Image (cartoon, rainbow, N blue to C red):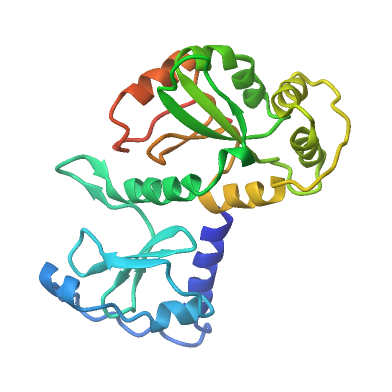
Length: 265
């Protein structure tokens, strides 16, 4: 994830020392009561300096006493109360078997997706009642994206609405990017999407379009391949999932607990 790499690189750069310098020994850990973690705000000066002054999106006590959850650029980090130590990784609850960090990521991801108007997506809706809505970052040229699209009728039959966001994997200005723009600028976007995913030539129309913004959004949300499915609760599943299997997943409790498997993108 580009944003995560930038954050981590900034933190490493800020904490680096030259070869002839010796690191200062870390002090012995001091347990911090949960009540103190709630009442004492963390020192953000080191973190903000490492991130060139970028301010956190949110700060709140973490599930572990003495740590704070800090959201920066949509990414979840953990910070010690004195602001000296940053932890990047997942917190797992051994009692509930829940990945608390992944649940938080899903919550944040869902909030971002909720801000996008459907008029800025290419939507394929069931003729009957909509039971579930899945937002998919897609590339018109990727094999599994094409396989998924070829089964659109089956997804819709399961009551699943598919909403496409455009994510040309080869990047802005690539051939896939130009095809995505052509899909968006077509008079009938659904028809153009279907033709493009069949490998048909849809021309090279251009217009004001959200393709660049959607590609950058996907990078921010951690999309590393296509298709990447975002469920109703913000959970992201990378890869193709067959219609019946996806319907079963959506019918279950969608609170992320353990990673779900899908075909590799």
